[in-house]
Length: 73
Image (cartoon, rainbow, N blue to C red; front, side, top):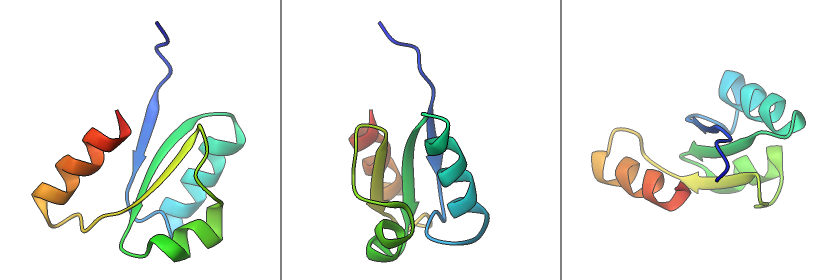
């Protein structure tokens, strides 16, 4: 069983969240990236892959956050 870490990054469509997501992916890491703008996130980082799961999430909505975590794991 693999014990590779999965990064759960909020605000991944711009700023620090975007840069961290890009850096983790560049090193072969796995990222669940959340943002209010799914399309902006995909434009900035790329399409869904084995290591990248972009999700549209309002982090102030507990239900959406829990659903995002379930989708990623």
